[in-house]
Image (cartoon, rainbow, N blue to C red; front, side, top):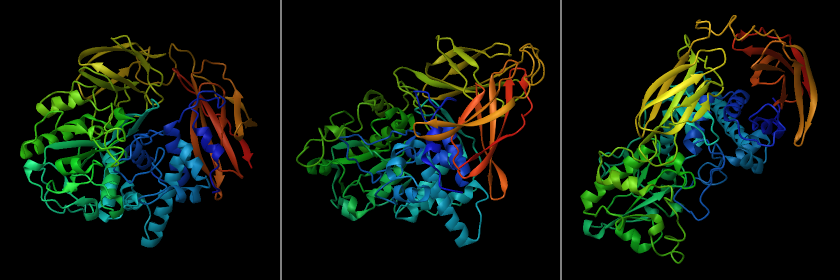
Length: 584
C-alpha cells in the first residue's frame, strides 16, 4: 500500500456529505475506523488510547501560563510527542509521509500516525516472536512499548490504563458532540508484573513508585512542620506524570498522583520528604503536593466525580494524620503559592487547577465524605460529562426497533423530547444524550418516521450516567424494519452509478453519483472496495442523505468499485450494480 495522502485524511474531517461545506469538524468514528482498517489495528484499541490520552479533544493544549509536572508534550487526539518519553511525532512522520506540522494540525492524520506506529511495533514483535495479533489482548505488549516509558512497571501501567476501557466498555460524548462507544469485551491481557516499592502511607493508594532521588529533598519532616496541602493539575496523563517524576532530569515531583477516570492514587514521595512541586522553596518545605490528572483548559473532560471524591478522601486522610486544618487557608491551589516570577512558581505563573475546579463541591466532599454530588453529574470511568450547577445527572440512551435489543438496529434520527422542553436526535447508531438533567423522575417522548410514538419515564440519579433504552414499534405493529408499511414502498435499487473527478482546494477527489430512486428515500448506503494484492478489499461504507458522495481515496494508483442501496422506514433496497473508477 502506498503512503496515505493528506487530502484523503482531510476528507475524513468533514461531517457531512458535501465536502465543500463551510463548517467542518472531525468525524471521529470515520477517522478511527479508517485508520484501523488502513494499518490493521483494532479500532477499539485506537479509541481507548485516544480517550486515555486526550478525551477525544483534538485541540488539547497546555495552559499558556502553565508549566506543570508532566513530561507529556504531546499534541492532538493521540498526543503524539516530539520530545520526552518515547517521541512519536518523528516516527509517525516517517511511517505515514506526513510532515510533523501536518500531524500536529490535522486530527485525522494524528490518528493515522498513531495507528502506523502501533502497526510498525506489531510487525517487529510478530517477526521477533513468530506470532500474529489474533486477539485484542495480544496488543498489550505493543501498547506498552508504544508508551516509550523508561521502566517496565510504567509501561505496564500505561497499557492497563488503556485496556480498562476495552474490558469495561466506554460510552462518552466527545467535545465535538459525537458519542464514542466501546463494547466491553474480554481482552485476556497478561497478569500484572508491577510491584509496589514499599507500602503507601495512604492506605487506599494503589502503589508506591519512588520518584528519582534527584527530584526531591530527603527531609525527615515532622508533622508540625507540614501545615499545607497544594493541589495541582498535571497538564498531562497520569502514567506520563509518574514516568516523568522518575526521570532525574525532570527536577520536579509530587507526593501523590491521582487518575481522572477512576481516582486511582499512586504515591511517589514519602510525606516526610520535601517534594519539588510548588516552585517555591518555603511552600515546598511546609506542604504536601497532590497532582490531579487533567488539563485546566478542559475541566469538564478531566475533573470527574471520581477524581473529586478520591482527592477529597486523600486530602482528608493526610489532614487528619498530620493535624492540618481542613480549610482554604491550609488546602490551596498551586495558583495561590507565592514567589513567582522570582522562583519559578506560584501565583501569576501557575493557574492550576484553574477556575474549572469546583472548590465548593470539593470542600463539601472533604468535610462530609457521604455528600452526594451537587455539581454537574460528573461521571467516572469515561462516561459523558458536562458542566453546570445543581443536583443533576446525564441521560444517555438508545432508540431501537422493538425486537432488536442490543443489536446494531438503532433508529437513526429518532426525535427524543425531554419534559423540560429540550429535544435531540439519535445519532447514526441510535444513541442520544441529554446533559445536566435535574434529578428525579423525568418523561421522554420519542418519535421516528414509520414508528409509533413512545412515551417513557426514567429516574435521574445525580452524579451518574443514567441509561434508558427505548423500543419503538412500526406503525403496522410489526417488530421488524423490512417489508411494506404505511411509510410507503421499499425503495428500488439505485441505478446509473457514475463517478467523476472532483477538484477541491486541497486536491483532487472523486464524486460518486447515481440516479435518485423514485420512491421516498431517507438514506443511501455507499459500499466502497479497492483492489490490492491481487484481490478486492472492502474500504468503507458511508451513509448519505443525497444521491452522491464525494470521496477521497486513501490508497492511490489502484482501482475502486462501489455499490449503493437505498433505505427508508419501509425497508432497504437490494444493492445496485457495481460502479468503478481508477484513482491515479
